[in-house]
Image (cartoon, rainbow, N blue to C red; front, side, top):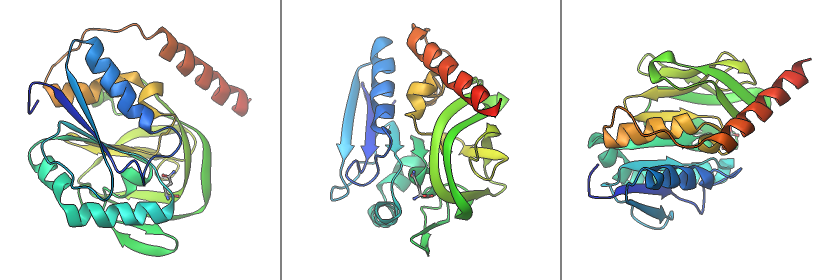
Length: 239
Ligand code: GLN
């Protein structure tokens, strides 16, 4: 951690915050506090400079227009690139995932991404809307992904990243893989919010940020119930 407290930055809540993605910030802060870590949460709007010294940066989903504007501002600001160079953790969801790559399409126009992840996005034949599930890369030690997706883009991974998961329901990147990660950068199409539905993913980000190999377990009764309910919904839809 860069300072005494864990610093979490929510990037551009005025542009990128669909489907309850702000919940990712609440979950991270809460799970850190429950382990006795002091937490500082900063919500940085798109007209503000992005501090480069935080431990974890969160970027949510967004419609095409706000996504293009957000990417443009983040490129001009440079703070996220400096933070990544210093080893900060980044978690991007949907639009916030696509814009970490080299390029994406918004309103039919190809836009430059931040080039922090080796991936690019184009448009699919139809919107991918509904439950998203997958088996997460075993190297990450996180149980199956569950989420909700709603995106027109499809994402193609280069050799510089690994898929976050193999899709078992829904579309994700392309119907086969979902999300991507490299080092301490991780992106997913999963809303829900993702970290409420996948608390082990929240703990992975906390471990990356703190360097801890293990964190004390928490009571995840409600998260487990939610996960079981969503898994049952996916199974019922298939039957
Ligand atoms: N605008 C992007 C797309 O449709 C991302 C959507 C989202 O963040 N939910 O692909």
